[in-house]
Amino acid sequence: MKLFTVGPVSMYPEVRRVHLDQMVYFRTDEFSALVKENIAKLAALLDTDYLPGIIYLTASGTAAMEAVITNCLKKNDYALVVNGGTFGHRFCELLQYHRIGYDSIDLKWDESLTEEHLLQKDGRKYSVFLVNLHETSTGQLYNIDLIKNYCQKNDILLVVDAISTFLADDFSMKGNGIDATIISSQKGLCLNAGLSFVAMSERMTARCLSIETHGDCYFRFADYLKNIERGQTPYTPAVSIMYELRAMLALIESKGGKQAWLNEIKEKGDYFREKALRRGLGIPSYPLSRMLTPIVFEDVDAGKMFIELKDKYGIYVNPCSGEIGKKMFRVSHIGSTSHEDFDNLLDKIERAINTLRN
Ligand SMILES: *Cc1c(COP(=O)(O)O)cnc(C)c1O
Image 1 (cartoon, rainbow, N blue to C red):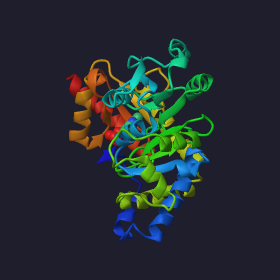
Image 2 (image 1 turned 90 degrees about the horizontal axis):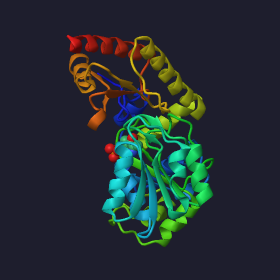
Image 3 (image 1 turned 135 degrees about the vertical axis):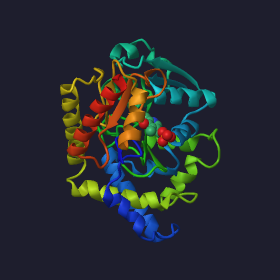
């Protein structure tokens, strides 16, 4: 079985191995030290200096998106959301659910976010900007410079769901004035699902401590911020994923650090894209994240292709949902995959196309 999905991914053997050992009880100095060490290394990868603003939740990424809304946003905030697919739509739904006013930039699936879209929105109306920097459902990577400039010019807080861009594309919290970054264990970090991190700027941390949360009690950030000072969480965390994280961070270091890691993923993606184009496969023209490549099909059903690849060859690509599900699927470049795996995938895609055409 081979996974070309964005998360969970084909995991690295160095990470899987941690499950062979007994892990320590978590209310101990040993576990606190592990957490603190991991968070310090994550801070360097996220490029933020404000370590006291980094907390983690035992939950998938959507819970972290929701928790940021309930902990960092006020009832009278007015948010602007880039709604370019499943995950942008999810931000809209969460805001609606929590009765926070918002406006959205609605993009068609293959429409690029441009400066025009932003200029059409009167920046003075908004207090918070929410964006899934890589809209995973289409593969589009938004231009962070455009977003940064818009937010800085209009003094808007910037919340970035970086779940599917972190550790695939270049990313800097500090360099882009980001006030809250959300990441999750099963995507760029290539771990099992279950942990999500929220890294807040100093001003966002202060804001969050100054407002009464309007969400539930379990994800009250004030409690997480207090506990993390000593490397702890209010409730039992997914201990095993903290161990996986240590192994993963060590692996990235051993490969030469962040830039070398990003280069390797880019190189895998370039290899795949070039060969895919040479075989006549279609790749959309909007700006893409390095994490994945969407493949567009003209005359076969991409949803059926997904099933064919899975059932016949044990290969898992990422299907798309909704209106684009029949047109497109996505191939991830993160995780433990090699050039040989991509060659094999391309062979099987060609065979599956032939099977479905007949
Ligand atoms: C995967 C992902 C999430 C989180 O989804 P979960 O199913 O809750 O883990 C959120 N945002 C983006 C952009 C994602 O790619």
